[in-house]
Image 1 (cartoon, one colour):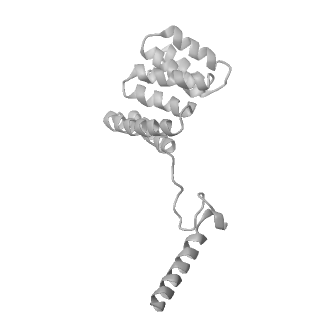
Image 2 (cartoon, rainbow, N blue to C red):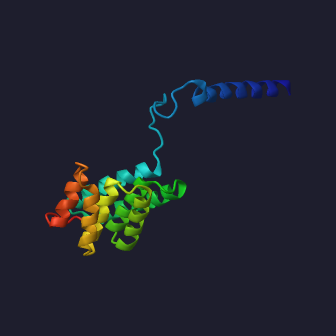
Image 3 (spheres, rainbow, N blue to C red):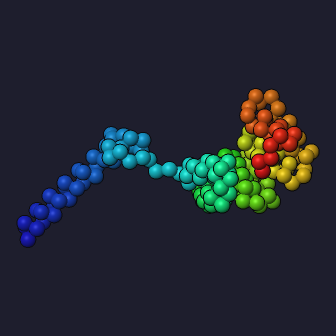
Length: 171
């Protein structure tokens, strides 16, 4: 019986030291550079942004079914992210964007407006909401979004201005 207890204690001691050596409190390098080479866990928001970037590339190649699937994956991740950390303008911006890209302009607009309530000068929200207004034939509201972006010296202003002028239609 003493041998078994001694073996168990030795096993416990060895494993405890192994686990402690890799823990953040032991002075190892936390989430950014662990010794085993694995990458840090990405948030739902970060995963969603990756899907959105993929979807945009698919759209440019006119692979619309693949784009739609990527937007849908992104939307699901953004909904989870918004439930966990509600009221983040960037999350609401991309929720509006993915929802709009999936053809639901009404709910896309709701997400954009929630985002503007948090950050009225959010460049992305103002641009994308303006694009939604153009797509839904509310030109005067699109101009209002453009006015918010005026003076920002940003690509969002130029892109929305081009959509309003009819130079490109990327709803």
